[in-house]
Image (cartoon, rainbow over all chains, first blue to last red; front, side, top):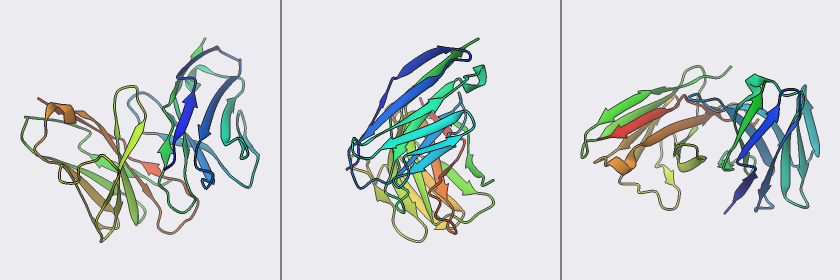
Length: 112
Length: 117
């Protein structure tokens, strides 16, 4: 089955700097890769996603890149703000199954 | 946007009792719902896939007789933790996908924190 690894587990950056979180997956059949943000005590919320037919997707300060050959994808947050502090989870799934396998999470702290 | 609601948000029970957690899609129909377990500072571990009108599909290592899942309607799935023990204490969270769209996005409930004494 699918296995998703995520690094780093914790990340501290200064406000205004960029943050990068990386994930690798094992199942080459996976073709949908969402990223979720979970604030303390709250539900995970989708922040960006990418499908396997696209190499990069950007939404304002957030971007995701996908390397299908290497089976890894990354989340990039630019101009970080204190409100970006949260736990971020990547996931991989076969589109249509909706069975997400989540990474282990990255706790991001943006220092003011 | 799509809203998924869980109830209760917190529950404390005695060892040996059973606890039911509800997951409702408030403004959309959900053919499929998913149940996860999240340990402190850990990831979301998929427990089972709940399909409306049929038996749930459990992930390897999850006891189906321990964690009973029922998906009786397109807007409601329930997870019952039977004969709960302290090691069942955890954060349980559900998610649902819209039946009418293939975007792939899952919408999550706010989670239910179970404490077994």
